[in-house]
Image (cartoon, rainbow over all chains, first blue to last red; front, top):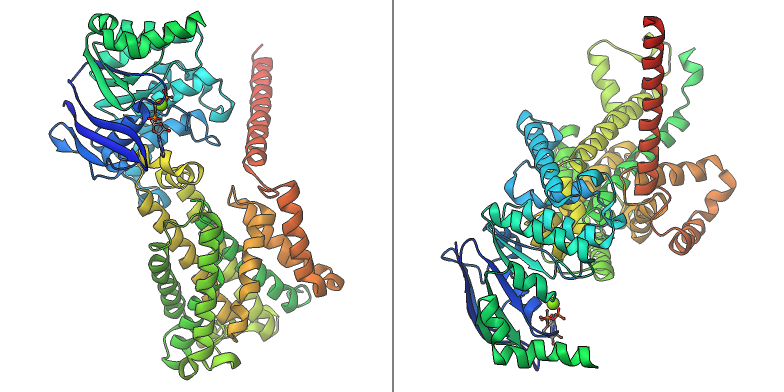
Length: 257
Length: 330
Ligand SMILES: Nc1ncnc2c1ncn2[C@@H]1O[C@H](COP(=O)(O)OP(=O)(O)OP(=O)(O)O)[C@@H](O)[C@H]1O
Ligand SMILES: [Mg+2]
C-alpha cells in the first residue's frame, strides 16, 4: 500500500515548480512534506491526485500507476485529499458534504433512485449513518444541518477531512490542515490525526506548523524551490544543515526581523 | 353543470403552462450541473418535428411518436453534450445557441421532409385522437353533459397534468439521491467534486442529455397540442423564453423554473394589455433579476425556511398533543 513518487518534475511555463522529486510513503505512517512558501508542496498533491499531469516522472500507489488516471479514479484507488484553500460545497449542509465523499463507494443510479428501490433506500441509510459517524469523529456531530458556508474556519477544515475520509481512503493527503487554527484547535487536530492513523490510514501531510509536524510525523521530506533537499525522521530534519539554512533558518530570520 | 365550468380557452392556456413547466424543468436539469444551455429550443424542435413527421407521414401511434421524439432529442443531447464538456459559462451558452440556430435552419431547408418555413399542419391532435379512441369504446362527450371540444381540451389538460406531475416527481426524487448530490457538487465546485470521486464527465453528459430529452418531450407534446409547428416556433426567442423561466423563478431548486414558467405564461393571458409587450417585459425582467436577485425569486434559503417552519409547526402541534395527553392522564 505504499505511495511511490518517482522523479516527478513539473514546469509551468518558465517556473520549475518541481524538479526530479522522489520519495516513498510507507503503509501506516504519517509522512510530512514541508518547505517554504512556493516550494511546490501543493503542486505535488495536485500531481498525485491528477489535477494536472507531471511534466515528467510517475506516481505509483500499491503497485498501480496513478499517473494518467482521472482524479475520480484515483479517489477510487483509495487516495483522497483536502485542499489548502478550503473547497467545500458551500450551499450543502455539513452532512450532505460528507455524503458526497461516499459517492465512489456507493452505486445507486437514476433508476434505483427514482423508483426508490429497496437497495437504494438501504444504501441511503448506510450513507447517512457512516456520514454521522465521521462527523462524530471530527467533532462536528452537532452541526450536521448547518450549511458548510456558515461553519467557522477550523470547523471547515475538519469537515474537509471528514469528507475525504468518507471515500474510505487508504492514503489521506492533508494540505495545511492546521492553517488558521488556534492552539486548542491545533491540539484537537493532533488527536484527530492520531485517531485516523489508528484506523490504519496512511497520511501524507503538508504543514507549516513546525511543532505539530515534529510531534506527529514519522518521517519528513523537505522541498525547497521544487527540489527535495532532505528526508528523514523529525530529529534528523531538525538537525539537517540544509534544512536549517533553507527553511528553519528563514523562519529565524523572520523572527529576528 | 360541467358544461358551464369548462372553458376550452382557459384549459388551453393551462395546457401551455404545463408544457412550459416541462420546458422549465428541462433547463433546470442542465443548469443543476452548472451548464448553461441555450439549445433547448433546438432540442424542443427535434422532439416536435420527429413526432409530427412519424405520426403524420408514417402513421406511427402518437405515443410512440412522442417517445421517439424525446429519445432522439436526448441522443442529440449526448452528441452535443460531449464535445461541449470543456466549455464553461457563456462559451457553452454561445455554442448551444449556435446549435439551436443550426437545427432551425436545417428544418427550414429540409423542405421535402419538413415543408420548410411553411411548417407542418394537421399533425394528429392529442385530444381529438383520444376522443376518437374513446368513441370506439362507446364513451362520448354528451354522456357527461359537455360538448365535444370541451372534452377534447379537458382530456389534453388532464393528461398533461399527469405527465407534468410524474416528471416533477421523477426529478425531485433524483435530486434527493446520490445522483442529485453529484449534480449539486459539480455545480458548486467541479474540481473538488472530481477529487471526491465523482465522474464529472458522466454526470455532466447525463444532465445535458436528460435536459435535452425533456425539452424534446415538451416539443413533441407541443406539436400534438397545437397540431401545427413551424421553424419560427423554435427560434432564438423561444430559447430565451425558456431561460427566463429559470432566471426569473430561480434555478437553485426545481420549484424556481416551475414557478417562473407558470407565472410568465399566465401573466400575458391574464393581462391582455401587456401581452403585446411580452418580450420587452422579458428584457426588463432579465436586467432587473441580474441586478437585484441573480439567484431568482425562489432559492435554497427560501425552501429551507419554509421547511424549517413546517418542522417547527409540527413540533408545536406534537408538543400540544403531548400536553393534552398528559392533561387527560392526570
Ligand atoms: N497552476 C499553476 N500555474 C502556474 N504556476 C503555478 C501553478 N500552481 C503552482 N504554481 C507555481 O508553482 C510554485 C509552487 O507552488 P505550490 O503551490 O506548489 O507551493 P507550496 O509549496 O504549496 O506553497 P505554500 O506553502 O505557499 O502553499 C509557485 O511558484 C507557484 O506560483
Ligand atoms: Mg500549498
